[in-house]
Image 1 (cartoon, rainbow, N blue to C red):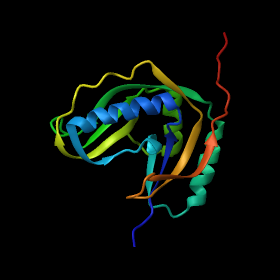
Image 2: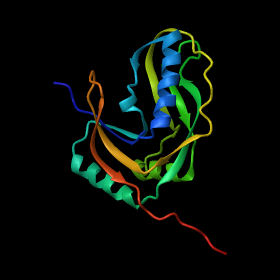
Image 3: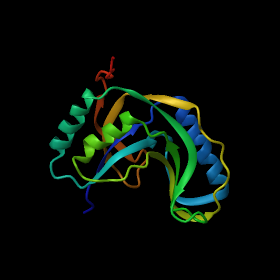
Image 4: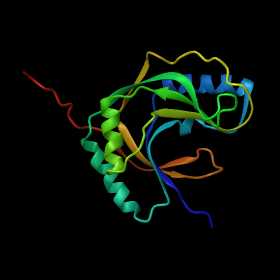
Length: 177
């Protein structure tokens, strides 16, 4: 029997951002072949991959605690890749790295050291083709106001099922002289 995997992430809910991601994914599909293409309803930014989880209630409570974080803006950037540039194993849309995003990421790491390269995966598991030039997504930004615990359903579309979500509603801290 296959085990169930979970991850924590920020869903991409903004329609304009989703359209740009889908447009870029379609450009990639014209020149490249990947085993897995991310469905628009699955576009997200991963904060932490959990894998198998023994205590799902713990992670639901952890997500609920994220409501103390304020909402923030993110901007999509260049199309990038992980792996060999000739046949990248993952192609993604980069995302601006903000202090607010880093704090949310750190909250879910629970002291575990981890590199954070914020991105939205467009495709993975390269088969053939070369990475084309794709216009930057710069200056397209969206409000991040939700954090979600997702359950993974391999082979399904959508592949990621929200288990629980929370609205980020903390106050932005302002320093006064």
